[in-house]
Image 1 (cartoon, rainbow over the protein chains, first blue to last red):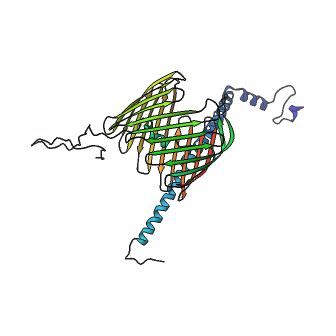
Image 2: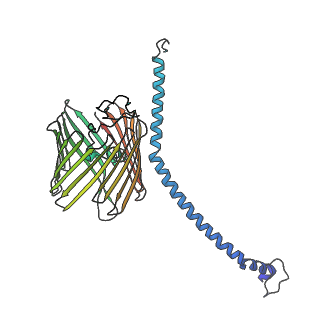
Image 3: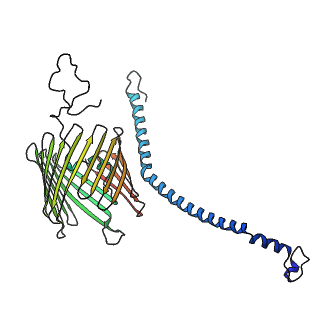
Length: 101
Length: 312
């Protein structure tokens, strides 16, 4: 019964159709088997790589946050204070210029 | 040509026809006094080992007089309890500490008492110009955990000698001598009666205006090298290498120390996978805000603390 509903007809019951024969030859060929093994290995390696990259990114990120971010913030504040002081010095330090209100 | 401390032109006048050397000659009779032996790693320790803590800390110092001051301090946070298992157990504790300091040019007294019954006391007394007596004791309510120590320091022209006596039959002596204006060498011996251990150690320190390099070897199996470079007057970088040849333990660490006008920031990273940062920020006159962070990636132990320090 199943063979009658298959496309590419002219099937007699008990014999495999042309399509089934072709697909089974393809799936059982060695190159496809090899391809499957390679694909599963690649998936395994990619998963491991992503995990370890994730771990490395986490460690690098938290270390950067602890070591570098306070430094950037403080250096920025220092620079702002220096600019403010220079501005004030230039306003008050030159007596020839009338002080601006 | 950086200025050399303690260099004096040679006492003999050059003969006629000889021009004096353009390089300054070192006067070996006039070397500077070296740093005390226990402070030989001082710069590296200041940068690489700040007082990291976990929890909240509040310190208040009130000066009653020019010489006398009181201090109140509150600490709340988890304290690590050493346990047999590899996991460290943290127990939240809180304590209040009261202290009194007396500061005189010749005498310094320092005492602290905590609510869990511990008492710390320190005395530093200048007996004469060159002889200093220091005593230090810590008393607890637990039996056999109290200890005390007395030091006698003699400061010579270009050397220092120190004798140490502690409870539990602890005897120690150390000697350090300036060999050139930049290099000083020292050694120490100690004997611990209670543990039946004795040891000998050697240390060397080379410093210029811009850098300090120290090395220390001890018969307990410790080799410690450190190098501090002062990159500018606000920034210094430090690195430290410690190797224990008995237990084959190696640790290297790198750190920086930024002293800016409003704050002081120290950061370090370790070969044990541990990174730490310590920030002291001046919010106002006499008001300091402290933040401390320590992340141990290996043991997955994270400690953060904040605090406030009030008083000069």
